[in-house]
Amino acid sequence: MSLLTRARPGHTASRPPRASRRAGTGRLAGVLLSPTLIVLGLVVGYPVLAAFRLSFIVSSESIDPQTGFKVTATSYGLDNFEAVFTGDRFLRPWWNTTSFALASVAIEVLIGVAMALVMHQAFRGRALVRAAILVPWAIPTAISGLLWKWIFNSQGVANELLGANVLWSSEGFQAWLSVVIADTWKTAPFVGLLVLAGLQLIPGELYEAAKVDGAPPWYGFWHITLPLVRPALVVAVLFRLLDVLRMFDLPYLLVGPRKHSVETLSMIAFEEMSNLRFGTAAAYATVLFLYIAVVAFSFVKLFGADLIGRGTRSPQ
Image (cartoon, rainbow, N blue to C red; front, side, top):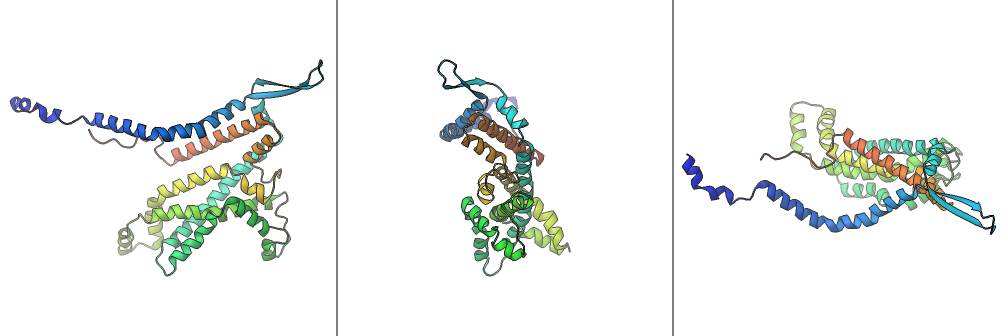
């Protein structure tokens, strides 16, 4: 047996080891991805690092006793972050940003799943229904904000339908609610589109087998549809969370700036930058970036996704 094994040494030596093949594939992937990584480093990485550095720069103005001119001195410290966490507008922007994300995403998931189930059915005019449902998502956010501003005008369509005279653009819960309604109307089709893609991957034989076994319709939805559409739904919810947490344009156009009911962290960062307080604006942007990163990481880990691509290794 040992002679036969030694007689064919080249049979196994002619095949390259699997580890070396994987290493070669990894090097090729790195070479092909290097231009994209370089562009991302210049477009995304450098601005993030520059903003992080700027957030520690503290500017102070004083009058030069010799010349009488205003002098600006810069130093490094944590004063900008102290202003973020101890200012008079500390809790309100955090609450608005988080509440917008929770309320909008929850409603969008319910409506988006319902839209996907409708678009997935086979009926006459299905293509027209799909196109009509996706129209709000295709409208730019700025145009959508102006459209809903006209609807929520004091003499607009919303008050006509309600038979009331609600000041939607003033301070209060109605302003917060108007932003949630407008954001849900625009982005619920996005959730529906991703869920629809997941529904089309589910084999119809599973529903037929459940029907043959006498399972009710709700059983197929709860035990077949939701588990198999979960990957697409998780991606949709994650994308919407990241989008809503940095929301700026919709409340800014729909309700207006410096409204405490809808003021988000992005709006405060923009206001600080407009007032030439670049250090404080960078601190707000840095805190928001870290907040979004923590939320995204926690969400992905909560649903058991693989962040670093470990996966399952094939047997050697």
